[in-house]
Image (cartoon, rainbow, N blue to C red; front, side):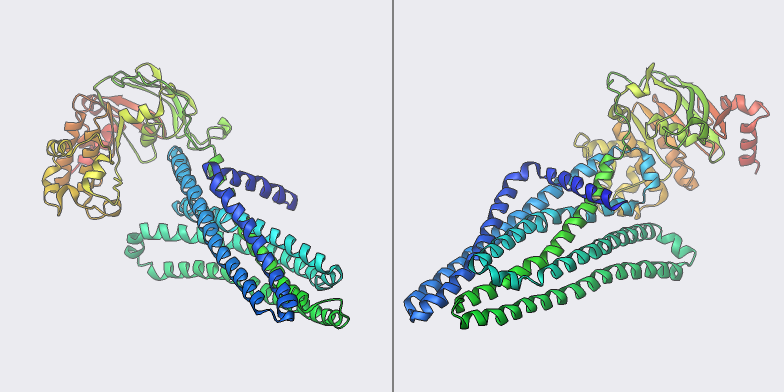
Length: 589
């Protein structure tokens, strides 16, 4: 990105960040008013102290000194109270804005098509939702208002100094251009350093999430030392990125202190001469000394504030990029009157996992001209080698992905014309890899749907054969299965997946290799659950174990994205085709 682009980009993103205030504009404005009052009060105190030295102290007026002391003390107390409310309001606004932004972002991502999650590491998304949005919060709590307050304080202080003595003001400001130049360099270095820190944080989040999830693989293949070394490398890069920010601060702050001391030295050198000439008072000297400290502190802080602002803009850029990404499944369909009790039709469907906007000639087709139909109440099964395209068919039926050519119809209505939520309400999928949340059995089955009662779940569990093992768990239906259902066996998790589908009572049931990873005893229970779920319901089954689909009304054999055979089990066995070869291979013993 060019320098010109970067500058323009930063301002446009900052404007967009400010628009996030929404209903928080009023409290944010109140915090801004408090900032102005604080700047005015801070600039007035040195004036009172200088006047006290020239007037009350010179005359020996103890009563007047006491009054000045009480006024200064009152100002300090008032400033402390205003500082408290300003800080509280600004941070409250920041947290309210980021809470709303997080909710909107999560709600936005919930509607993304699965293609986004296929290519985006979980750790990267976690960084966007947590760390990057925290960075945006800093814009409101420690960025915009503080910068405005510091600039206002600088303007007021320089204005008062010029009013007291223009000549002396220009003299003590001699080091300021050097400070501004140093601040600009510091700001640029820190911007680069903070960007590297964010990138390293994201990389570390991705690594930790992947390796905690796949810890069993690491241990099974005895890769602990190698993965430890990888993490140490990432951790070292993370530390180095932070050290670069520390290095910048460690150089910049001494420079500020040195320049500040230079201004004080110039003040004393020139001011003392004016005092001797009786053109400058001791009170004015005290004022200037205090104003110099007030001058350098905001300038020093401004560099840090602008860095916070820039970092917030960088974070906002990443978050807005997620908002602006065209990853949502199109919601053009409005029809909700489709019963899902009619025929399902695939008519010459072509599909690729690449972007549907890509040139068709360059696509790597996963499905090639797929055509079939499923009558109401039928059970249709798909078999074939891994990668044949079986799972892609159910992904299209649920509109997890968008097909490029052909047509899919349900009840004679195009799938794209049907409301997306209505589709997923009527189609339930039981996957081979069952995902359970770190929650109770009951909540994993109902997914917190208030319409499903505990009695319904218990009755359904009895019907599908899951009640017996649930009753033996500590806490039974309130038992916490932990992350991904790690406290349960594969067969138990599979039964809960069937139970979840059963209580939602879908019109169409999809089973994706639901028995391929379980033992024989569990398979018998699951087979019973399958018979219960598919009875009187249109069902689509993907299976490797051909013993589970022999009663299917139609079996479709796929190879390399095409349908090569179809028929009942008996019809396919009588042919010298692929299905018979697969069957004989599985049952030759």
